[in-house]
Image (cartoon, rainbow, N blue to C red; front, side, top):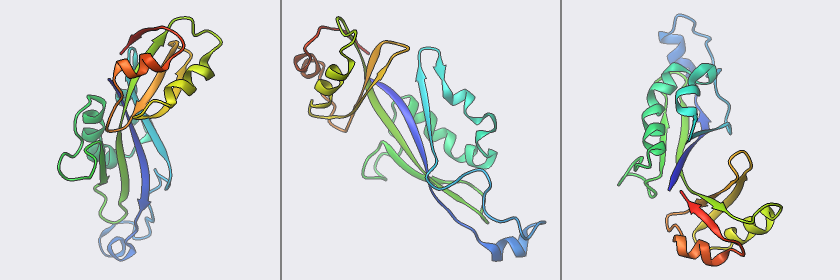
Length: 174
C-alpha cells in the first residue's frame, strides 16, 4: 500500500474583538495564506517527496507547525487520529492563530500502485475495470511511472480481486 495526504481548507475564522484588543495591527483581518476550498496533496513515491518541499512559501509557519505532524503520519500509513474520528485516516485540525484560525481536514489517501503488462493504449479500459472492484474509490493513471493509482476505502481489495478484474496481466502491485 502507498499513501498520500490531502489537506483541505474547510473554514477560516476571524475574531476582530481579539485582534482589536491584543494585536499590534488591530485590523490584521483574516488569514492571507489560505482560502476555503483550497486543497494540497502531499505525495511520497520514489523520488517524489512533497512533504519536504510543500512548505516553501505555500504554508504559513503557524499552520505548518500544527498540521505537519499529521501529514507526516499519513504519508507513513499511520492512523492520524485513532479513536477520535470516525475514520482514523481523517483529522480535523486548526492553526495556532487565535485571532484568525484556519480549519483543515487532513486525509490519508491509501492507494495501490498497479503495474500492468500489455496495457499500452488500454488505460481507459483498465481504469474502468479496476474502478468496478469492491473497495476501490478512484483510479488514476500515472503516465510518468506507467502505473495505475488505485485508491482504496477502509476495506481495500485484495491483490487477487484486482488481478481477477483485469483483462491484462498485472506485473506487480506496490
